Image (cartoon, rainbow, N blue to C red; front, top):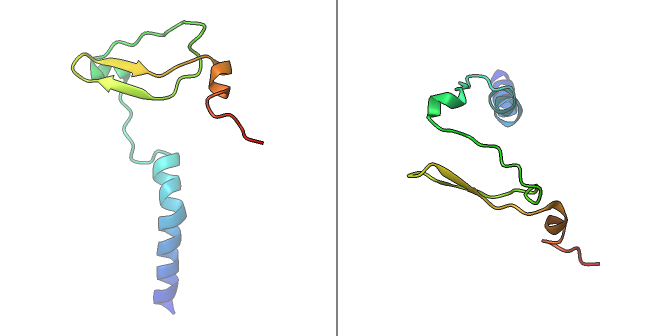
Length: 82
């Protein structure tokens, strides 16, 4: 009976609490400041680029390429079929 209870508790931990503790609460996670990576960031202030999705990092140059469009165009990417 004790083995059964221990097994059920282990399954509950694996299914629920492990994800909660490590992913959501960030237990055992190290946070590094952006400066420690040796990169420079720039905010892009372009009115038509507000709905950004996919990103690709070109490691040799350090450039980040982002697929963007405006919000209205994004709503038309996947038209709903009625």
